[in-house]
Image 1 (cartoon, rainbow, N blue to C red):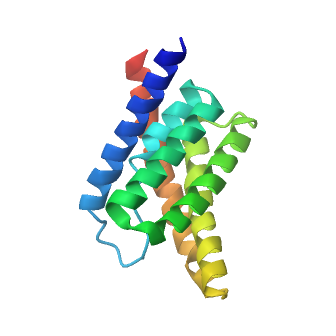
Image 2: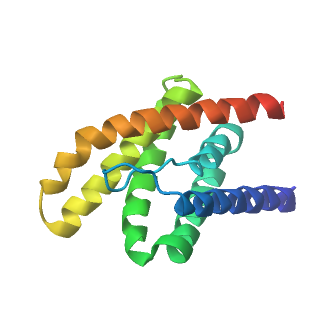
Length: 159
């Protein structure tokens, strides 16, 4: 059974990395820095719903590390990790409130942006990155809703 679990983690991590690569090829044509579609987060959300939290956390870490090293550079690792970890904590917490998958995803989208703004603020020793927060929160809500809807579709088709 342990090898089957490792295989699922490896497959989902690989899928998340592939989605991350595809996402890096097509940046959104918006004037706001850091806004992405987040399609690789469908895999993380799926793992959070269908697997253990620990497994989902490992998949998230693998995706962030591999995508940062291969596609966006080591500097983005700090932002991705801070956003990913805070987002993951928020999604796990929101599961306890019986939110829908879409609600959990929207929570994750907003907190991912908050984590990145916190990291930028600490690195720059300035509160100026917080000026982006309202716009990024709105974007996080929309992208989170889209990711949640797509994850719902995937889960319903895999039953």
